[in-house]
Amino acid sequence: MVIKRHYENKQILVVGLAKSGEAAAKLLLRLGARVTVNDSKQYEDNIQAQELEKLGVKVVCGSHPLSLLDENFELMVKNPGIPYDNPIVKEAERRGLPVVTEVELASEISEAPIIAITGSNGKTTTTTLIYEMLKNSTLQPLIAGNIGTVACEVAERATEQDVIVMEVSSFQLLGTQNFHPKVSVLLNIFDAHLDYHGTKEEYVHAKSKLIANQQQMDYIVYNADDPFVVSMTEQTNANKIPFSVTKDLDVGLCIIDDQIVKDRVPLIHTKDIVLPGFHNLENILASLGAALLMGATLQQVKHVLTTFSGVEHRLQFVKKYRERLFYNDSKATNILAATKAIEAFTQPVILLAGGLDRGNEFDSLVPALEGVKAIITFGETKEKIAKAAKAANVDVYFSEKVADAVDIAFKISIEGDIILLSPACASWDQYKTFEERGTSFIESVANLI
Image (cartoon, rainbow, N blue to C red; front, top):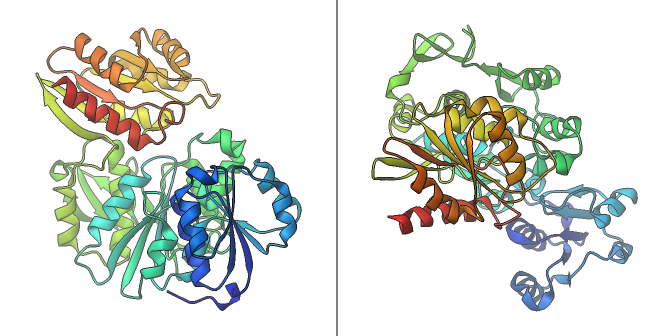
């Protein structure tokens, strides 16, 4: 860890706990800061706050009082899930108090170079692929970020012999100032999280912070098929490594005659890749670009691509039962992700979808429903998804939650059908996380069997 002396005796407010807030508070303590934690959960039920208090952290629980800002803090570290329209965050910004997320701290203290991956879809798969590809190479890969491992916690133990492979969301990136990855990976831009960012322009602005501080010795691996991504890269000083699943590229990664090639040199035939879905070819090309830049061996790359079948909750094969195949794609929290999951299959699909209502309609899902024989919908968006199903002339059924949807799906299915959980929505109306929702699906399949 690079020790930053400027945090000594600095008064810092950490707003929102969960894993990232707790890790940031502990790190700042070790760096010599005077830390106050503010969390909305009541103190009596807040184990994290109680433990931090024992370490010498001042804790304020139960609400976010604006009067707390009168204590002359020099920095606010905000949990990424807390929106910027939260009154205490708005007031902090009005007073000129810098507001960052813990990935900013991670970038600051890391001795290891960082590969940072973002995009509307495919982040987790791409991050995992890069991590696996870098095993047995010169640098030891460490995985971090939005994938579930707190970035500043990983950065604290990283050395120069490591490389951090970090998934970063727009929520995290918006709270950065000097974040500086050695290699950035920009997958795609889609209308997502507009309830948080307000407009697509603000969403793009948050994503663009991935490359804002990159210099001529750095690299950006980017999707040359996405016009938003291409326009974002126009201002960067980093070396550009494009990838494309539709174009022949002389420089970068693409597919020619069913071979994945880099700078026109064949690497592997697509028939040897076991990860399902055309959309995953984008993730594979991006992963190859980043991993090879940081020293992955071709032997390890080929091993990963011929054995890696997906990550948990992301087009994850669950079980085959009575000639039906069950897939868990709970991480598909927007329409584009669900569309790509549906299009990954040539067999008839029974789709389980629904969740948090973020205000959008589902008209753009309609074209993808051509291969769907029925939809079972649940959650706040069930009426909107039912409307899209009817527009596509697809049978629609309503359920209370995922568990009920599994039972209905099996009853209406026949041999050869795909039963796919790909919600196209966030989970927070009924489940704490998309992982909890996916686990419910897996458990329901097990109970069915």
